[in-house]
Image (cartoon, rainbow, N blue to C red; front, side, top):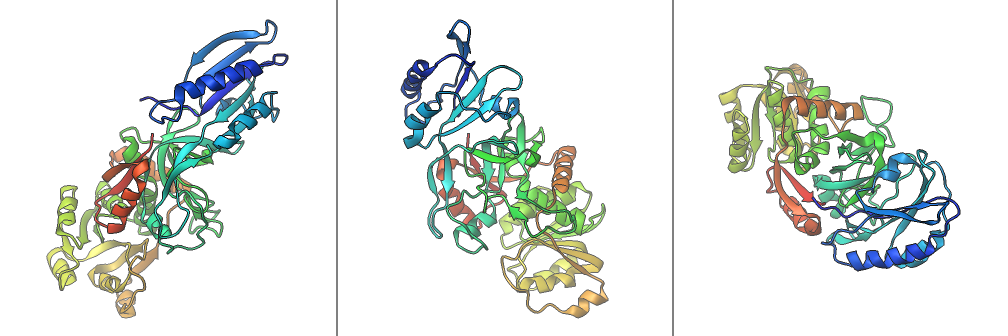
Length: 435
């Protein structure tokens, strides 16, 4: 697949003035690449011999990651810095200098601007625009994103129904791409869980607000957040995995302690987390049933392995389901609302109800008697630790689980993707193809 490198790398030893070559190469690059984003840019690596004072060779190559791992030890700038700042300032370019610990050269990288979807105003479309390429440093690395996935969280933010919104921001919590060493990676979608594995700390936050997220060609993120993609997944499938997979994994296994042979009910099938929970429970040897307001979505879930289900829009759906199937050992819910009060009646004694969302709001009509008499546990769950993220990826690889992708949109059509998410008609994850 053709790629568009992120800039020019100039390599020099002390004692050589490369200004003339820089001017020539700048205009050459503009001539070759121009403003046509369908034309991938040429990355030139110049090696200059300090004794002879001339250009040794020029080569094409995917060298965009060389500075990431090779060196970040020296803050020296070579004498072309002022030139680069002047000619590129108006074009939103960024510059970072590095010293290569494995060779006697200084690296100066001029990064081109990249495309991203930026939220500037609430209740307004995202803006597809140029943004500065994120710079790497000692702690964070630049990842070239290949795909990103949407979450309900992104929709709520655009509607102003989320706390501590800071604008402008690049949304997106899910992403997969090429790491600094060229490895295919998937991103852990959160920051600063804290030291307590039982619950996140006060500094915990999700990728994509306040930090810029994955709806962009590149992202700057700590190396500890990068994990190898399960080998059987495509870019789009891998991008669909992080937030939904982590949330489903913690809800099922950490919080609800799911065991093989238990009977599980997943409510609201069709969303990303609900589908991942269904797939994980099936892989763990559970007997899985689902609910939905759509008969079509239930049929699709049955094709994926669910044993059956109920349409919650039908009167007495809960009683019909229990009379047909029996009670459940684990229930996973994302909606809350008045319908949640029906779930304990579907539970076996000692059952666990895991809840990871509240799109329908407060729970009314819940009787405490049935909870304490049947010893039912209601367990809240949010995201998960990096350790659980690694465990989830291992589980996906071991069982060859493939996340369900509803549809794929180009990054430039991100607003169409958001519109589909807002309609709640999807079955699986909505994904943005980026590079």
